[in-house]
Image (cartoon, rainbow, N blue to C red; front, side):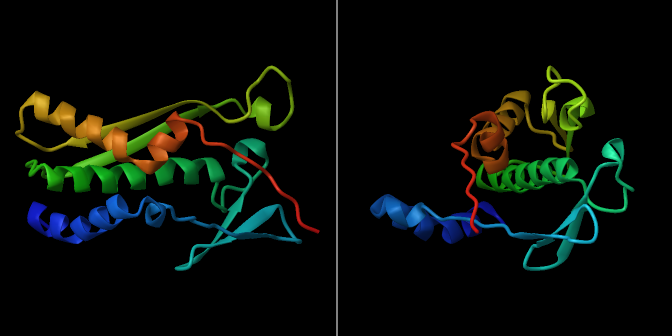
Length: 168
């Protein structure tokens, strides 16, 4: 896809959202069923059924997906798609691109070993390896715009309002 094709694809959507801001508000959903035979949760992605379980550092076997890994994978996926879309829109000469993410966890927190250990990632690092001959200022602009428009990155950077409900 080139810049003109991307503009043709997204142009009508942008116009509709400018004309009617409410039409841009969409609720995405995910659903999982907790397994009654093991400590796992089956997630229906609409394309496949995934099973998430305990990380080996919390007693898991490593055979099931880890939700922490899935969070980092979602960040990589979103940043990669956003990077490619921004590069396309900017007509940025980009060959191969590799996106990586790593995060630091203290499993004492999630296991309740000590109250002062945080539950969740202490730090997350997103990285890009880019094959390009573009000047540094264009590379910097590409990365800045990728950060700005990556939904998962921005969700982690600017904490959304969270709530929990229980239904009987």
